[in-house]
Image 1: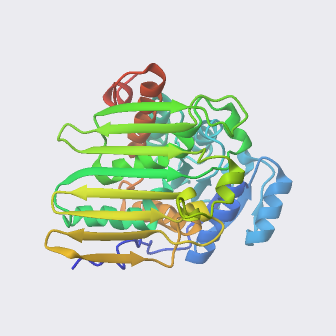
Image 2 (image 1 turned 60 degrees about the horizontal axis):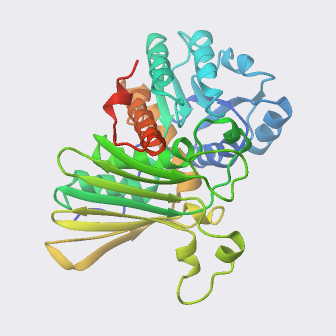
Length: 377
């Protein structure tokens, strides 16, 4: 029988003391990256943020020895081997460009945030710059390291469900949009839906066509077009997937007070997924909507060979912050082995292309192919 209990575990590097320089001091760095790194025994040695005061506070909290006044000072620090980037997507490309100049010949790897860029053109530029500088580029598509998502991928690789037929992700959860999101040309597609779109790529590969619909989120008071996202992905071989990313979920006061038998509180705010194959089905949940409460994700599956038996697992680890061990570990392993990271910048260009296709399909009311964006000049 498939070993579901350990299928979620990432491969760890042989060397854990790679010297990490941290660019950014916001929530995702302070509460996710650095918590996970300390738990895994990784080695953050320096930090810089938009303000030195923020960097100093994060450094004190996580015992990081060096605090730099500017990002350029951080990039020029001779001790740093890996750059860990946690800045807004509109600021990330310039930071990576500078890292390729200042870190050439010294910097071994960069872990960028998702999205790598807001367009395929810029994403491809960053991939090429890092390759020219001899820097291994990975992108923090951290949902691939959610425990249920990762185990599901291993289940598919093992052929336990037969040939994949259909997958779906149904999210009813209210994100906390960071202030930097107000300036983006796309909101949900490149910030929230990108997790699910990349997960579908992880499970099934890059789709061929996209149908999509979107509308603004009534709760979000700054201008935006893509709030609630609905999309259908098609593959030439017949596989299909759908995502329903509901960032509204209903009026806040109603959602918080749901207690009757028609809709349980767990149903009001949650993420569920399902994968169907020719020989079995799998269902799961993502624990993230309950953050900061530590709620593990879940997975259960049954097959035609054992139709009356559900094989179930729930892990002690959770997506936020434990998945961030996997993303950094993947980069370290790629550097050690001289291989392409699973979450490489090159791979992420296709995720950015898929996001562009979804955004265009929804706004132009037409079927879009991923190729028309992946190969655009």
